Image (cartoon, rainbow, N blue to C red; front, side):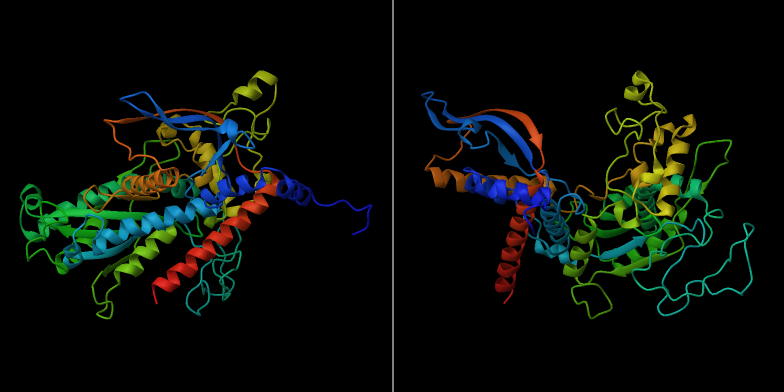
Length: 487
């Protein structure tokens, strides 16, 4: 590079970061966050006080930091936003699911003998889309047949895995976009109704009332949502039968895998709800015809699934979002004011209204697929209608209308994410006490006084490059450690 050529901004900033006097401490803080891509900056202080004498046993203040700030991890679960924090969330989800299958962390190991099934619930069809069909043509139809819009109704292509057409409608004008968006917005409600229908159907299969069944069998769930390329979610769920006291108690002998797998199709077929009345019409929303039910067995060779495979599968999708379907991973702000106004929740933007600007989505500028763009536009248009206001379609337009939890579980399934995070926090606090030779924290003898202020978020371009390098080194170290532990 000649002396007249300019270095990229990130390279210039990286040189500044590495040569700064506080670089070693900054690197230590970034490593403590796991290489978080968007760390939160805090300023303030924390003191450990002896309640008996008032003596300050330990004092930390960000005034002693080279930057005057403390970095903490953002905690975002999305892999597209923060790979470091999403990997931690994925690991926590794996342990949460695994303990409900194999026991551990307070859940008895005998839970692995309880009847369990891995169930996939799908969305119905709102129009044909391009797809892969195990070596067959996408949609083999008679040549020359066209739809009302003059487009071919079939596709004779054998799509490759990364074909950009996968998930896109064969004819966008034939595709029922309002129905797809409204189904997506009600997916959480459909799941809730499914859990209720499962309990009722299990009772029916057992020949007793739901109340009597509940006194003898407890049904536990854990599920995760996965976006398909067509922009609609699947629900992958674990359903387990316990005794009335939960995982500590086995269910009666008649509550077996057969009862569980027989009840799922009937319960899924029973679930339905109707959209609010509208001059656009009404939609009867149900689950799709594709329903997969597989028992989870201790012996995966017996035509069942292994516990570790199921836990890993669910944990993988817990960190993915709608971006897998060709949309964006953040809420949409006003295209007129460049995001300076509040997020669009109504037709107007407060900043634009006060400054004479015309608010708008600027959909053409979004880096999304054509199908996702029409889904977003449909969310925006339906969100302006009063009958659909409770669905909050505009704030969730980037999610193509889905506003439910990506991963959730029933109370008795296993431990909580909060339990895992608390255990990790206490472990780190114990290491810090050992490092600083401090007494154990006891509410009766010690008191923590802290005052923190938000001071920013994120990295500069050079810091972002170095943080990613740190994250990859940490990930490699964890991988090597896991391989050694597994032999």
